[in-house]
Length: 303
Image (cartoon, rainbow, N blue to C red; front, side):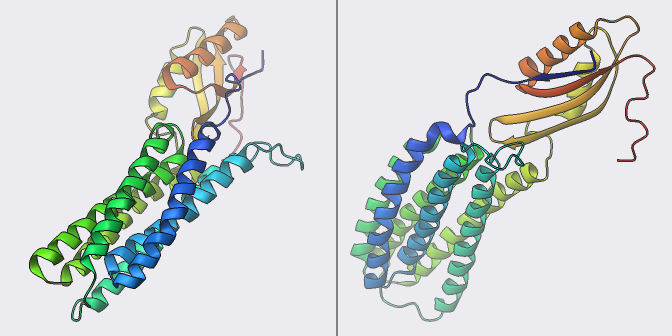
């Protein structure tokens, strides 16, 4: 047997399973963004405006994530996208990173410009809007929490909501401090802290996006361990040209060449290798080539 190919049961990509939850979070976030934006402009609070800006990023990211799940599930009419459009989810996650970085940098710059002359703000409005925002974000977090474990796309949206929930708490803290001290500088300080938190979250998610787009080995999977386990399959003499990567969240892929011992049953070798990848590493989509002992394979390739 020269080659083997296996598929998981057709369960669909991870993000598509949480489309309704994404839609619910999107509707809540879009509605509250308008409220917070108006409140920030009326009260003059940079913390509220920064949180509204982050909420705007949430709207963009959640909308893009929702759109990505639809695009990813569409059939390819061109015949050229042999992997389908599943990477749309990863690009939506990249958009989340860019939006978070843009908002974070803007708020930091604005906060620095206000350090010497912090304007008066309506602390009561800050408290009320901050509390309402926290409630909205908690509901959105509950909607997205389970999906964040399976989908990078949903994880990007989930991180956005977490950061925004922290922003709502920060707005409330700033309001309390202004009431207690009478110093509007707390509005600027909290706005800057919110921005730093947003930037940190963007960097973390960005590294994950780069790993997927760069076709690194899936998170938590060591290629050396995989090669060793495949080499230990009965009838396998050597493993070479092993490649592991993530197509999109919940869809890990592997390809490898397995050199079989002289007289080994190629079918049994293939079945054993598939079982190792599926049961130990959760890789159900594998393309494996079984070669006879002494085969040159693709050693003549330079890449």
